[in-house]
Image (tube, rainbow, N blue to C red):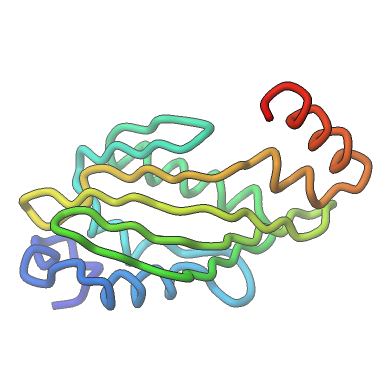
Length: 155
């Protein structure tokens, strides 16, 4: 049975570290736009996705969010540095490089926490990254003032 068939095949094929690395590595092409279609069956219909920008509930809203990201980026790559799984919790450390039409490639450094439900599907995903810091690092005129502001007010 293929992974992208809308059945409960995910339950019989647990999301092991190797399987997650394989699926997510196929998602982000070395050239061009990403394709998430083969990992959507790994998500529960009631998925809750959160990052520093938004909170999304439900598979249809999650698919729409992935579509918006695809539209905004000319190219999107992800390098997975490490994956650790303990029980129903998975952590991935990654670098995502986004290329926009008018701007240079922008690497974002982050990690993802996946929670796998009893049905073997992902019920919660939380992505952690410093969106503005990583973007401003790539823009010389913003880099120094942004870091100076952070040091002055937060550290």
